[in-house]
Image (cartoon, rainbow, N blue to C red; front, side):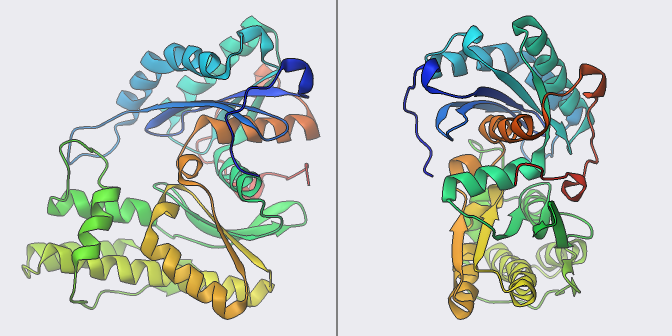
Length: 346
């Protein structure tokens, strides 16, 4: 199902959910109905000083400052009043504690004022579910690649069983840290990811770097250290090292994806998370999907990175299957793993 911004009357819908995303740098507010129509998606990101990473308390302060404005903006875009909302959903975890708590407080307050059910959802599971509904994917192998998470999984006995994951940092974090260390930045774009992709595309010479695949899991920290050393100590051209880093890291992920394909014999591979935008990664995955006669689906980039719409959709699925969340049970869970969530709606 493709995302749409069509306006639909309340009486034509089963549920309208407003979702609040606040796990890291982005505060997002999304509104979606139970037919999967996206009614509004608004977001604002905390922008750290160039060359620095996320400061959780500063990010939480940003979320507190923009929360009310974005909620009102989303309602205006959806042409709805607050009384039209049937459900308030929020990211309960995993994520940065201060950021999660800010979103949870706003969600609890809104649910209490409007007297509507509150639902807490798992951020990672919501990435998967929005990818499935927007691509029409039914029962795929899921490769989640983002700034905070790297893992490959599939649905088994009502749980997203994780076959492999990063043993240290995520691939997005690896590329971002490399960029900050070697000076890849754009004054108008504090997040280095898109510029890293452009710099890596300019590289011509591959330099050997540690390739660390352990069973179905990967490790990026040693790869990152070696890449930085090539630039700072060996004075190798930044573009060539970025190219080498990208080829090595993506080859590792492609290998574990192919192992999962061979193990499960599934017919679909779904890529979700902000790093899904990387064109070189899509080329590599398409090649193995062609070899195995699989369908490759990539979550539309607008909804692949952190957003409130995926939380709103996750809330609808959760509410329809198991009801609302008691406020007494709504404490945030910074370390909440996706494989601990029972998928009761399937």
